[in-house]
Length: 493
Image (cartoon, helix red, strand yellow):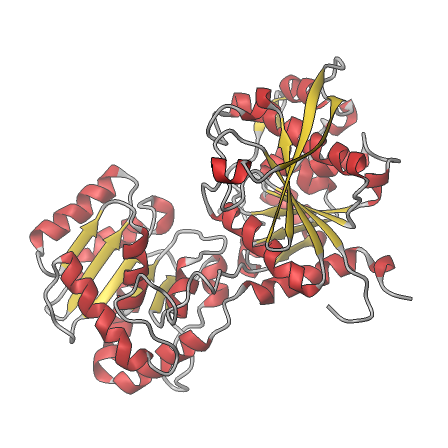
């Protein structure tokens, strides 16, 4: 942040955050982005539910900051709001405490229970800000669970101190939207009737959509890559909200995620057989390939082209394409390592290929954190052929470890992987556009051709990948620019 601007106060609101509770990529972003914004001069608070499943070692560090009663429902029904606080790495975490809503164990239990839970949470965080007299410049909401905040901000909290804040809603996963009966949502929110019309919350004659309402009332909408911001305005990717998002496109922006470059660092990674950096990758990476082959029972051969696949085994991840071309992928010079769980038909298919190709294929149908690190370091290429991918992290981690990504040009994959250009010797991966098995196979074959026929150019790409900045710092600067755009009155005189 430039010296002539004041520090922005930013509130993050979401349903999960590493290391307290995490089920997916949202938890990583809620952890990493505030930490990246703090050195840029932002004062950041993260607001989370105080779930029963948060590990005791964190609950034991929480300090009590007060409580009050808050009306929530359309009949005036009131609920307890407690505030527990924890400071870690310069970020303040405020946990909203209510056993009736958050003592269920897992963060997500079922939509019937989750709708009231996140109606309460969305209103409670705004009431807590007024109670603590900490008024943010920007309230940054994440996914449907926090999507009612912009509506409360402009209605029930209009004219209160927190009503001066601007709001951003970030789309991490558009597939989940918080859809329920209109009367159910009316009761649990106590929001005015006029919001339950088609431009805002109304989904159809009988149903309301929380995410739709939040997107309508937010001052800005972001999603986790530039390409995905365009894709979700189409019927194929828009999950039924494409028309709504197209209407609101003037306030829609894509900002690609980063990764934790301290956690994912081949120079300090204790889970590798040999650590390495940009200067030593060409000599040391081979040691990790040998360790990977030995650990998984693959033939010990430095000359093999090792393809890694680390993924949930679902259709979204393009596994039907992989399944279709698997026999053609394999030859006497190629090994394939798969790590993940998911759809039983893919688990079964990959186990079958392992059984038919002992020594050349390993299907590790489980999740193993240390093995994931070794695959990133020991494989030559990583396969990410997704049907859709809002951002994607595996391709960023692979590049960080000098492993060349082979990806489909969709969402964040398209934004982060520049296709290899044979004429100019530029690019950092191999890509294909249409969702077709033969195009995936062609991309794999192009990668193998470069690896076996022009190793010096392949090595150039490996080092380009390792030099690429995939940290959160770039993303954080783009978010800071957006916060400053929303709050120009905060600029120094």
